[in-house]
Image 1: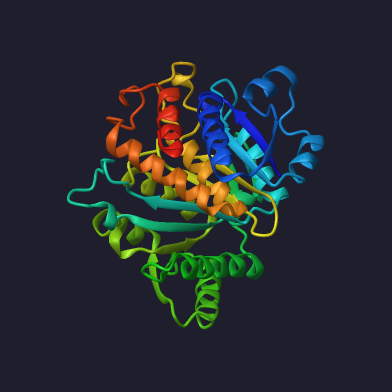
Image 2 (image 1 turned 60 degrees about the vertical axis):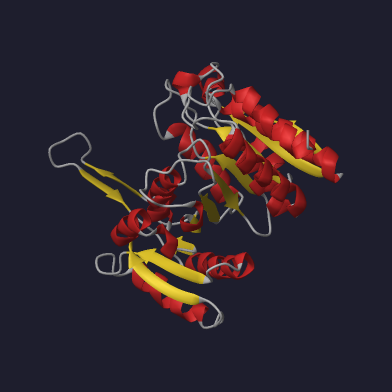
Amino acid sequence: MYKIAVIPGDGTGPEVVAEGLKVLRAVSEKFNFKYQLVHYDLSGERYLKTGEILPDSILKELKKADAIYLGAIGHPDVKPGILEKGILLRTRFELDQYINLRPVKLYPGVETPLKDKRPEDIDFIVVRENTEGAYLGAGGFHKKGTPDEIAIQEAIHTRKGVERCIRYAFEYCRKRNKRKKVTLCGKTNVLTYAFDLWERTFKEVAKEFQDIETDYAHVDAICMWMVKNPEWFDVIVTDNMFGDIITDLAAMIQGGLGIAAGGNINPRGVSMFEPMGGSAPKYTGKGVVSPLAAIGACQMMLETLGEEKAAKKIEAAVMKVVQNDVKSLTAGKMGFSTSEVGDLVVKYILGK
């Protein structure tokens, strides 16, 4: 019995989460596992009504879950940063979800903006450190609002944080067993202190994985090669900020945010899974956004929980949908509504 905390969130989040839960119900019946859902109202609407972001009592309950399934966070009437820091970052930090895992895979039938690239060319993983770096919030202002204003934002990297992230990347690469190469993405020529630590640790950990090839590239070069030669990559490991940036680029080359899913992973604790597309408030209630990213997040959640057969069945069903049914993953151009796409995935799961 898995206890799954569900946070539908803002905008189109509840719509896509509903389809993910529809798919979860189908695979649980097919593969005979049980789960319990506990829904939590953590959203911009709640904040606007009550002033609460993430109450300590709810955080305490989240720590007791087996997994967290998140829709989206972001409200047009709430200043940027309030919900993101108060819900997303706090959850990541408090639950020590130190890995952000982003599979980047082009499915047959999905269009990529990259000329002449095929599904076999775009199939890699980005392992992003998720609890350190520039996102810790260390820093502040001096003489704010004056011509002499100073803003300081510090990036903090620890040996422990860097090593466990790099080690996870190597272990994941070995388990994945594809090209068997880990690429470190950094900026050693400018950020000489932080990425000296990353590079030294990378080389030390690599000695324990003699079967895996290693590589290094500056973050700007990674962006170029991701567009020109995505087939070069297998597993990319990087820090929090660079990972945040390059995974949005990666989402575009795999077909867009309508199919991009991610996980915030604590390998020995509670992990959180979400679609990467955000709340998309302008589409709220219209039933036009793709639920496939949220369904992919459900797939990642089941894989992490150990239900690998169910996860593979979901992926196979999604691949059939994008190859046989939907015209596009762009909102309003799928040829089906949000709920109809969810129904199609369920149909393929059940073999109808």
